[in-house]
Image 1 (cartoon, rainbow, N blue to C red):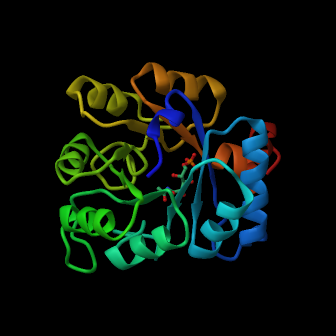
Image 2 (cartoon, rainbow, N blue to C red):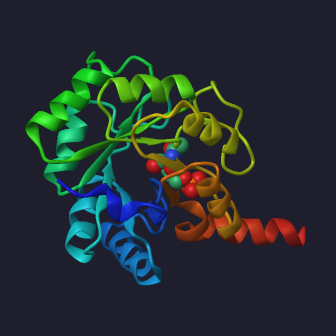
Amino acid sequence: MMDLESLRGRLIVSCQAYPGEPMRDPRTMAQLAQSAVIGGAAAVRVQGIADIQQTRSAVEVPVIGLWKDGHDGVFITPTLRHALACANAGAHVVAIDGTRRARPDGLSLEETIHGIHSASHALVMADCGSLDDALAAVGAGADLIGTTLAGYTGEREKTAGPDLQLLEQLSAAGMGCPIVAEGRISTPEQARHALDAGAFAVVVGTAITHPASITSWFVGALGAE
Ligand SMILES: CC(=O)N[C@H](C=O)[C@@H](O)[C@H](O)[C@H](O)COP(=O)(O)O
């Protein structure tokens, strides 16, 4: 089981390409992950079984693995089966939907986390959308709480940058487990603000590893679309 202390105050880089995109290739994602590590990432987050396997053999840092199935509702590692596949592919941490919504396999979040802990050495990151989600996820045995789904479940407004108010609420509530800021962190300053708001570590995805989005930001700023 990995030691979470190696992530304290550090940057985690999410390397994901979406269905149909040119960079949607496990080897490409593993190369992105290697590049992130060269830049100082303390861990990487990757999606899909093949991406987890390739990245695990390409980098020395911890791999947070998830398996997205679908694109709305509960789709981030939605079932225990998906989670165990991520763990078996080599993920040190399995990121799962950590909301209070019903799961497609009918298991509770607690049963899912217990199932992962009893069948693997992986830690569990619960991707949450609100303070209530996070409180429930800690009660269910999560090892890490992510703000990944804040702004995507209807419970929190989709802020332009990171949901700093949620981070402040989580740190004030004293969750008793590390809080990972994730979602819409697009600048180094925002990453710093997330730590200042109480995050234990910060995940950045799109702003580092999704060139189509980054390009569109520049194009938008030029007003030349
Ligand atoms: C909501 C959802 O599906 N989030 C996903 C979770 O893995 C990814 O699409 C995000 O890229 C990731 O959370 C990092 O966030 P950002 O790319 O904003 O830095």
